[in-house]
Amino acid sequence: MEKLRFIDLFCGIGGFRLGFEEACKEHDIISECVFSSDIDPHCQLAYEHNFGELPKGDITQISETEIPDHDVLLAGFPCQAFSIIGHMKGFQDTRGTLFFDIARILNEKKPKAFILENVKQLVGHDKGKTLKVILESLKEIGYHVQYSVLNALDYGLPQKRERVIIVGHRETILFNFPSPQRNYTPLEEILETHVDQKHYASDYIQNKRKTKHTSSYPLSIWHENKSGNICSYPYSCALRAGASYNYLLVNGERRLTSREMLRLQGFPDGYEVIVTDGQLRKQAGNAVPVNIVKAVAQKLLPFISETIDTSLVLREYEVKYGNK
Image 1 (tube, rainbow, N blue to C red):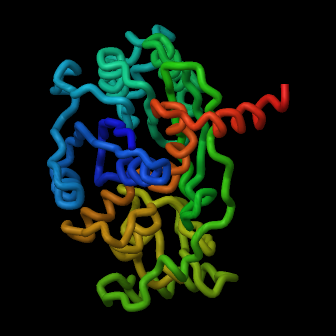
Image 2 (image 1 turned 90 degrees about the horizontal axis):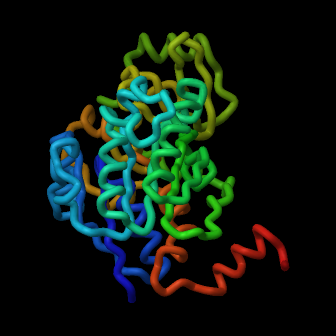
């Protein structure tokens, strides 16, 4: 069995790592995380508790020469400071953003491939100029780059969570993003049956919601947007770290528990919660859906492994080009 080394930047509580490691196991590849980093001390502690290693801190203060050699770079980078980007100067135009720290590491270590994740809004930011600069920067470093907007709802999770995924590889390959699965886990398998009373909204909030909205689903998660409009679905709208405390309510009555939020993001029940409900809400809201990472990695791994499954490559070629 081959070993692939990877690094986990802006690692949060480990969603990227979980998805990548699961995909490696299914391909009979031993994976090894050789470096992880996150600036949030609560995320660092949760990551250490569940993976046995304490992530390094602020990546902007870590030299790219200090990063261990690796085959794959994983990063769910924050979208702050994108207003700086937009003059079409490629690599130089990203300085001052956290994306630049990814770029300088790629430029120095030149791993075989990378998978990046960000909010869907990145695609349209500054009329598309921001994403264009990012893609051009990655190409300038020497990577073939593709991107797509994927929805967690299409990969088995009952959460409408759209994220842009950027995949890069040093060699020319026939990589395609995974096709939607459509069938997602029903809420019955996600929601807990016995929930502490502390998770229930006040009678005032419950009555206010139910006066304004009646759901057509026996089990649903109600979402109230910033305008006060309420909708409900047999799945959750996107978890958000900074949203109001009661913006998502199960059947209009109670907030999601820590375990339920983790399940909505694809974290296994074996993942242990060691922080407060408030901190976990922030962590889950910032996490990458494990299922999306796993689905993308499953498509990419055959091309970055030293023992490529040639039959799989041939099938990928036939799907894309036919029998030519």
